[in-house]
View 1 (cartoon, rainbow, N blue to C red):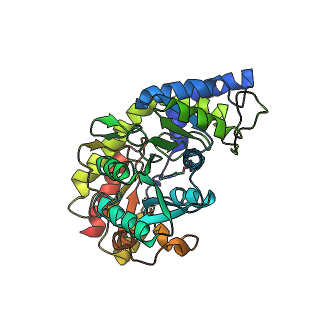
View 2 (cartoon, rainbow, N blue to C red; view 1 turned 180 degrees about the vertical axis):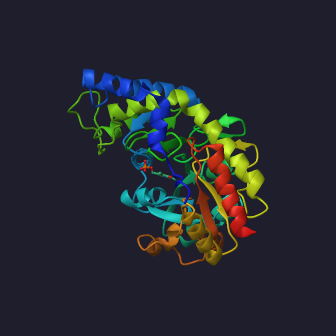
View 3 (spheres, helix red, strand yellow; view 1 turned 90 degrees about the vertical axis):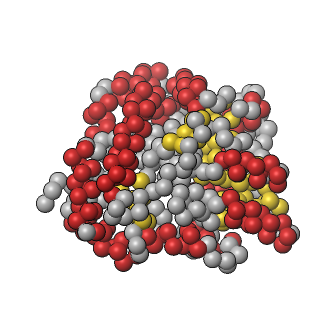
Length: 377
Ligand SMILES: *Cc1c(COP(=O)(O)O)cnc(C)c1O
């Protein structure tokens, strides 16, 4: 059997980066400012510049970033938060944690991004039923490609809704020539190790151009504190980014552009060589993906099961994002109106993610390509 290919290879990444990470972490071990040490501010400054936002606030995870952003808008009981049904659980979990209600919107069958037409009809339905107050839209840049921000902005403005970008999978991606990070009222991202810009543990960030909001996020991530340590202005949370994580991320930032470029090369090889055999992902026009995930579509669930098993036998791992759309999850189905979301439901049975990470060699990529061709031929 061939040597197994890895779906994610953090060990090889660490070897490639050499001593930069341990050197940076060792500096933290020397100064011992583990909470909000100087690396946190340094990372925030560099990341704000990187995405072109005025402010970046480092927080404890992507999930907590969503929570802090929504808490800052006083979103809670009786409020409807619109989001795609086809995303990671955190996007829907947070509105519920703060007492609001998620409203699940279907997605585009080719780009997998939230469908603006369906979003409009969901907003209309919520308004006419009168039980919930439409309050916010969370656009998710799924798999690394951007959500349709022009249309989402228009809808949010027309309806007076807060617009949040869940950029956890797309940090480093572009929309119409602009780096993602400034399309919505605020943008959140995640530094979970498997994300395109991943740390060595949990971490996240919020980007905004609004100075007052940035201050509010800083207060909320430290228990709602005011100008002095034991002044509590509001209910907050313990949501800070660890200094050690900031150090790891600072070390990795210098290599990030090359990593994104490598992901793009791999995606292009898959596109070129696989499109005759499986449905390769449609590119969102005028955009650049961060390629957190490269998903193809098989004809049906049975074919996907066979493909996944046969690849596994050849040492090629795959993954399914997402096997169940959120409106069908046991925890969330009670909040859904019961209407079918046909695109999300169909895709969850046909979608299959292939390995895509900067450590993959061309040889490994072609092993994957040939294996898929042989199975489908
Ligand atoms: C990973 C992810 C999150 C949550 O990020 P964590 O850092 O794991 O809390 C939120 N939204 C999406 C779309 C994600 O992929």
